[in-house]
Image 1 (cartoon, rainbow, N blue to C red):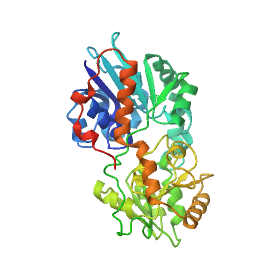
Image 2: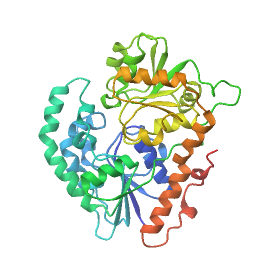
Image 3: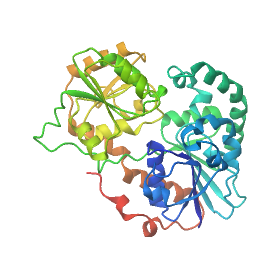
Image 4: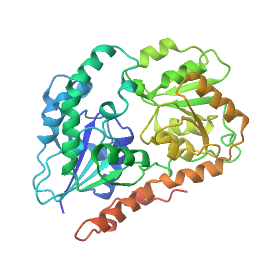
Length: 385
């Protein structure tokens, strides 16, 4: 059984790439195909399995400005050669599901989201940052072509998997297809609460934002809500809005840039709560924070409504404004939060359950023997306690 994993691009270790890494634990002999690859940007277990990169890789500054090549994405993904593979697993938030499928192969597409900037949330991408007007014009010009490709390519998928109920509904609405929900894998074995007596259960003297600094993440709302106030906000991450947001912020807002996994775990453990102001399709960051026993203040739409339970593991806010966010912070301050219960809730999004659900699906739906337990990475089965 030859297995190919197709991922849109490899330019950073974000949520989609974490799912890809877990798929490689299930299929350690699989080959990885992608549109663009920035060597050194993702985990070694992914990079050592890269088999083919599309022609976009040869275009000027492709790994940095690949988004500007958006009109070429359909041609690029169709250029990937998957002949000889029996099972194709696409990990798709853009065009990966549009690969050419060999006649004898089975194509399972794990959808992180249908292209949001085409179907639902283009305004989220162009509210801030430079060049907003011409980016909107350019997207409007190519959107009809990309939508046609996106819908047509859905016919090449034999089985859809969705990362949330939110995405399953959008797959049904946009592609007219049914999908099974398999939640992404949170590393609940690594992200754990602080030891009893170390202060983590009560939370520290700061709130925490963890995100790439891109327009649709809406970290600007958190910056505006906390700037000049009495509560401290620490922001982890980098992105195209880094300089603009730093200039916009006032104390007690601080930017930490990128941090190690160990440092991030400590930041989660000792924060008062995580601030999650964007509209996400799923969002692993709230899962990681809850795995550390900390509550979440999140925008009350999208995948966060499935991962954060109002009044039990966090607080939802609407509308998507700085004022509504701060009002939710006040509600959180007035409540009592059970770190153990928050941690227990996070375990339904563990790596182990992701593996178990993927194996159960593949065994039930695909022909032939599937001896995962003989071949999969044993480290993937550490208990999430």
